[in-house]
Image 1 (cartoon, rainbow, N blue to C red):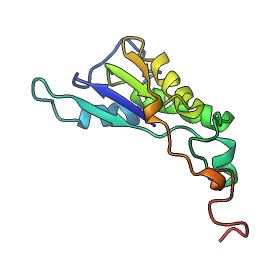
Image 2 (spheres, helix red, strand yellow; image 1 turned 120 degrees about the vertical axis):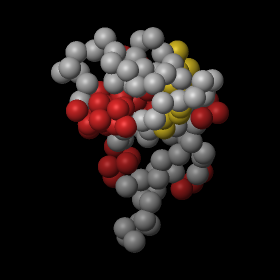
Image 3 (cartoon, rainbow, N blue to C red; image 1 turned 180 degrees about the horizontal axis):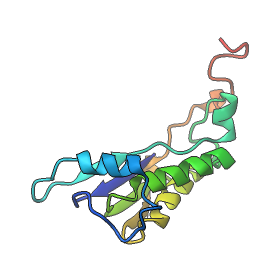
Image 4 (cartoon, helix red, strand yellow; image 1 turned 135 degrees about the horizontal axis):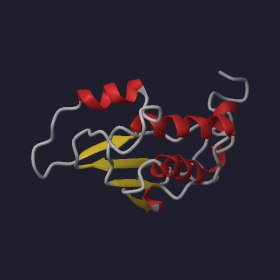
Amino acid sequence: GMVLKSSLSPSSSSLTCEEVTERGTQFANRLPELPPQCKRFYLIRHGQTDWNKQGLLQGGGYNIPLNDYGLGQAERASKELSGISLDVIASSHLKRAHQTADAVHKRQPQAKRLVFSNFGEMRFGDFEGKPLHGEDGN
């Protein structure tokens, strides 16, 4: 898992217009102002892995990285969030979450980058690597 934390209101950062997507800007502009001393959390899911694509159960027992499509998703998430100044970007130690958070952090270098093994996915034992919907797909 991954957590993004911001105590700042949406702002125009030092990014160029080409780097901030229109949808991301609209999202940032719709957020209400935060009262003093309040924090806002943004939760995003990691990008796609080969196991996601194949419909296999993926838990914390296997450290599956993002595939090319997942890396693209992480980059798009980074662009979408680039209009919001983040204070902290935290993820689990698992490659898929780590890679996604690193992509966001590339556009948010002012944010503190944290990694917590406690954020890792639960383990599913012998079920990991098996089809989510059974061997026959149902």
